[in-house]
Length: 120
Image (cartoon, rainbow, N blue to C red):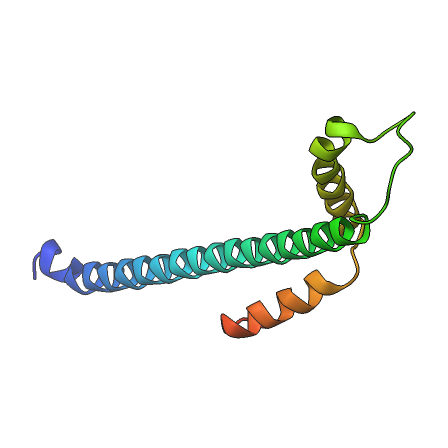
């Protein structure tokens, strides 16, 4: 019996193990990509929910201050009208960033359900 024919079973075993290892590596890579995709989806959903809450608060603040008159000596005029929306947007973003009023959390839960993802 030649050396080559004696080593053939071991070579086949090694080749089979290498194929199994490669398959496992592909599955691990696929799982990692799936987890990264899910994490990206979750981040986008959270951002979208917070943006919605911020927009809602901004509209609410604009409506609240619509009838408020400012003393002409220290305010009012075109400058105030022009920057009032900027102020309300900034306030609403800061409120949302600090935890908000709970609207973003509710929206985020519903969006996760719609995507078939569970809450963490």
